[in-house]
Length: 259
Image 1 (cartoon, one colour):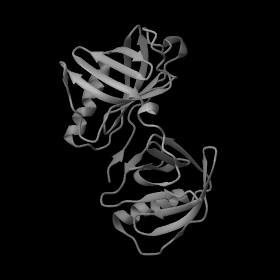
Image 2: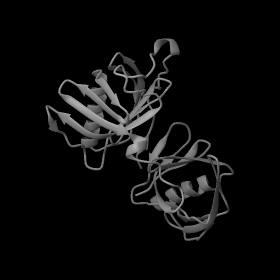
Image 3: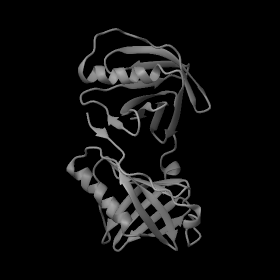
Image 4: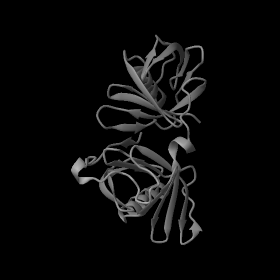
C-alpha cells in the first residue's frame, strides 16, 4: 500500500500582506475558485499531459493555493502582484508515483514558481510563463458536482488518522451505491452488504449495514476493515467535488469517485 503524508505546512498569509484576488484586467476574482486544465502549449505547440490526468488549481480566499498534476498535491500560498501570480511553496504530499507522473508534478511546481502572468475572462483562466501557456476552465463549469444518489462510487483512497492518506491496497476494490430509495449497497472488498442512508445538510447517516460473513485476509480484508469502520461511525460528514466524494468520521474516512 502506498501512503501519502503531508510534508511541511500550508502557509497562511496575513490579510495585511495579501492583495485581493481580483485580476488586474477586470476579468474577475480568483478567490475561492478551482480550475481544471483544458490545454498546455509550449512554443506554440500542444503539449499532452500523462494519459488520464489533468492540472487542477484551487485558489483559497485565505491565500492558500493547492495544485495537482495527476499524483501529488502541491500546497502553498498565492497573491496577485498586478497581473502576476506570486506563488509561495509550502509543501507537497509524498505519494508514490511513476516517473512520468513525478516529472509532471515537478513541471507544474516549476511553472508556478516562475510567476506566470494571469488572464481571467469569466470562467476561463490563462497562465503564461515565457512560451508556456496553461489554459484552464472553472471547475464548476467543466465538471459539475455529481449527485450522491443513483450511481456507484468506487473507493480510491483511505483517510487515516492525522494527515495520512493511503491509496487502496493493491489488488483490492470496494464501492458504495446510494440508491434513490435510500438503500445503501456495500461492496467492502470481500463481503457485500446492504443498509440505509439519509442526508441532512452535510451529514450522512448510515443505518445498520448487514454484511455477508466470508473470511477475508490480505488486501481485501484490510480494505474492508477500513470501509466498515467508517460506515459504522455514529456521525459522518460528506462532500462532493465534481466526481469525487469524501466521507469522513472525524479523522478517518473514504475518498470515492464515480467512474
